[in-house]
Length: 295
Image (cartoon, rainbow, N blue to C red):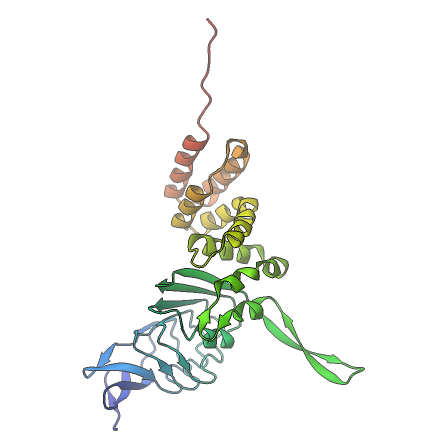
């Protein structure tokens, strides 16, 4: 088939679908169209985004394939949105993509191509699952190092970080939440406090597949680090996250000192609406004691 083109793409039409072979522009946000010339876009060619400055790429639900080195050296790529149909990932598709931080997967079924993507991206990632599966999953960074065993004259591979273990929570193309949650003790030993706070918030705020045992462990961590979590949300102006924290894990009367510490952080870091939220929260949970008078 002959190549066709418009202002953004070069593409070819098969019998009943379109393959986009080249992206011609360099926009920060790229939204692949669902249809070209009346036919659904189903595949993306080799090297289609190679070397581009794209920061966010959105793929329509029917795109199921990208060719070899599709995102090669997309140094600025930060966010990728795709559906559970996106399962055919060409070799080296994410080579040189070291700044991806968020994957958003639209779920109409429980099987996805997420495993293949995670196997190519070893940086810290937030994965948002939306649809019949609703979850927010954080995957730690990891790297592998070759270590020479001189007496045995062999080179061994040493893995640093818990990220590889978190990426091995699949049965085929289906994600296993119980295995993911079972890695938490390992993460506590190897990952930063900020990462752990995000992981715990993600699982408790979107508890798909969360067992009571895992929930209890996450909640114990949250209560112990609640001030730090509130500080994270205040510093990053994440008002909805702070509201969730206060609503689901309120302070007891004897924890007023921690609330006052959080209020102090809010006065330095928070937005006016967040400060107002915390003041109202304080009036609810720590009302002033009534004065009594002897007659």
